[in-house]
Image (cartoon, rainbow, N blue to C red; front, side):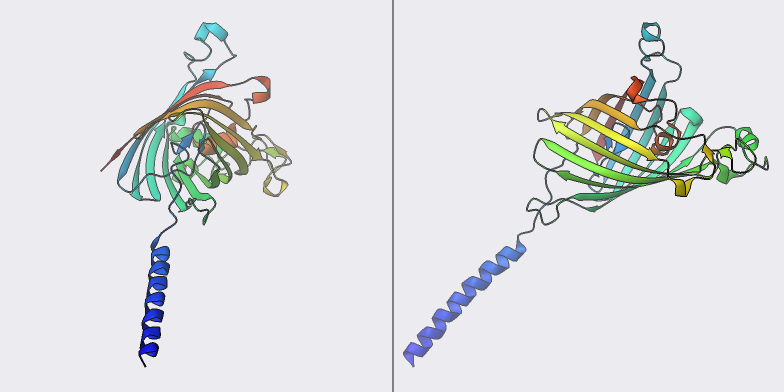
Length: 305
């Protein structure tokens, strides 16, 4: 009997220790990797970065004129009259959900935006990538007479001002130096100009785009950033035999400095737009292969409440 009781005690202790260790293992969570991008903005693209709940962010995005147009006479586009600026605010409702508003000088375009991070990459690779969704609704602020001249029935409607952009982004932090991502997007404009009667020649309302973006850290706070974005001219979305708003790819490369509360980027890119739908739909005059670049910068600053 004593041996039997001793055996039960030994088994109980053994199982208790094993259960305790198993419970501890289950309690240890696979935490997200340390922040990979430094900012939600990367030149003309978005990253999978979102702030923690309660953060308010201010944004200033600026694009100067074309580098090669007038040379030294306008200081390589810095004093060009075609410069464009966007000022915006965003707020984090949750750790993975941001909403925002901004206004851009060209077309006085207002934009309402939302970013939602669905998955975060974890340190033990339980989740190997970040996945985020991004959406923008743009409201063209030009005089309504602009829309009366480009609509077929010359009748102004508020809906003529609206444009939409949606995007999915997938990224991975490979190590403390290199982070890389890809994206796919859909752009729609309610109103585009009709160049001819019927569907022989004109502008499309819709555009699908693909892109890649990356960050290479060169110091604890400094990084080289780059992106390449390609608007696709798909036959299935063509509304005209000849499409007159085919957009060119947009290439950008720059230098980023990021701290715990702000990020600054200075770069060159081949698109003069700031809103993503403008870049994917209307970048039809600048070609980076011909050296047609603009200098730009992005500044973001955030506060936690």
